[in-house]
Length: 219
Image (cartoon, rainbow, N blue to C red; front, top):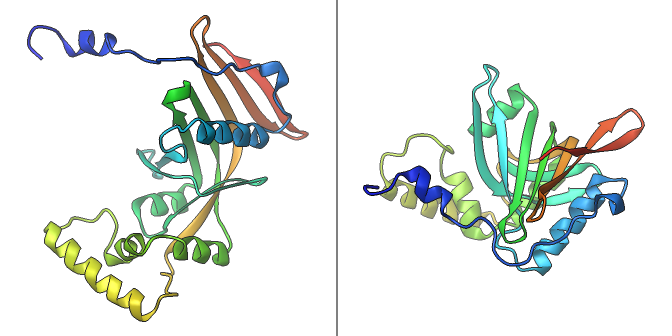
């Protein structure tokens, strides 16, 4: 940037375009899972791009944070599910500090959902089912090499993927022991809706001894 600063250019960008959904907090269900399912169904029906993409934030024992975007795999009464190698950096962080934060953001609707909760590994059969449901290329890439370690060249990755594909052709039901389905048991879930006339509407569900309580939050 030469004539104008990044700050000026960023402030000039549009934030939301088109009509935004309304959010009647008085009509929300008692369970945040029910509202999450309602919002996710609405995002899918509205053709929001990648409505199942979510940011997962974890932290090491020393407090060092890290975040990445991955896919929401399931929603149950227990919570939200995703899958990964437990030998990956996020897997090691979750083993040492089984707490995480999630964020789903649907730009086209001006909506986001923020989740904080504890993490636990799901049943082995759930992990296996998830891995076998992945496309062959994704399965091969998952077993080709150690995730997030230094890679000497892109060609080495391609060669290892081809080797992994050969293994999967010989053993189509192969699932690595490290592949894990993770359950996020929510302790709080916040629903955030952009609203032109009021800037934003925020509703947080918090788990307590009797179940869930709801609170409006200042923007």
